[in-house]
Each structure stands twice: as C-alpha cells, then as structure tokens.
Length: 194
Image (tube, rainbow, N blue to C red; front, side):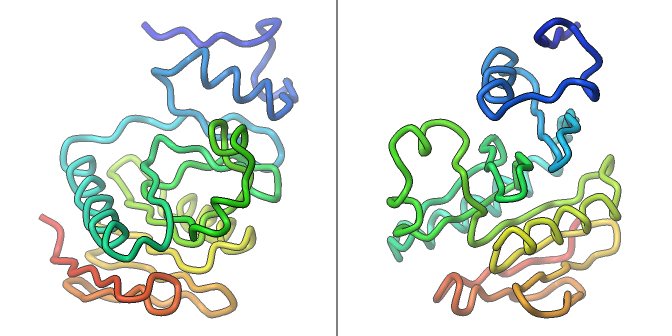
C-alpha cells in the first residue's frame, strides 16, 4: 500500500498548494508520479507496462544520442516535472530544452521543477491513457510555448504531430519523423507498434 502525505490531510482537490508545497509533496512521495493541472487539481499518473516503458526508453535514447552529438540542449525523462507558464506541473514522457533557455535558469530552478515549457515533448499513449486527455495535454503544451510535440498512439498505429502556430497533423505508422528547425538533424524512424 502506498501512502500519500498531504498537509493537514485535506481533500486533495480542495487544497491549493503553492509551488513549493507541490514540490515538497512530490519529494516526500517519490514512489508516486504526480502532475498538477493549471487549476490545481492533483493528477496521479499510473505506472506504464513493460511494452510502453520499453518504447518510451527507445525514444529517449534516440533523442539523447542525437543531442550528445548536436550539443544543442538538454534531454529529460518522464520523471521530470516542468512548471508551465499557466501554473500546471507536467511530466512529458520525453522532453528537450534548448541550451540557452536551460542555462538562463538559476541553479535552484534547474534543481527543482524547471519553470518553463520544453521546446520539444513526446507523449506515448499507454493502454490506460485516454486519447482526449492526452490530446488536451498536447494542446496545453503548445499553449505554454512548446514548439514541437509528438504524441504516439499505438492503438491507432499513428502519431499526432503538434507544431506551434499550426494545425495538428496525423501520420500513419511506420514513418520517419524529422525535428526540422526545433531539433536540427534529428530523425526518428518509427515502425508500427507491436
């Protein structure tokens, strides 16, 4: 059984936590993955199964290999929480932040939950994820300044591509995705999901 330590043991939806209180809640409960919506609702993220976890690791590996060569930014795993401009605290399955934006943060901002929207995010729909909820999350990323996002939907064998200032594009798998101006030279060959 997992316990969740909350200040004053109040209804989580009735408690308005400051950024520091939310950070402390997450630090106090490291076994739980928790996000927070822009209006303060706590969202407990279920763990993913082996298939989704392996696919997520492959995406992060490919992104990190490209980034080590390009040296243009920082790559982050799904354990990283970003404090978006709208007040939400979100954890994409993979994220990338351009180096000058990362270096502009203070050391404390880098150590805690970075107060910025990544430049690039990946979300992978697991069997327990609602498509609508993930699509709304992708739109929230764009509204927060994310420039490029890929949302993989294995159930439909497609990827939804989100670009700042453009309409969503849906592409069938297999496909070759390109980072274009956001991730120059990054290409990801995506087969059909098993």
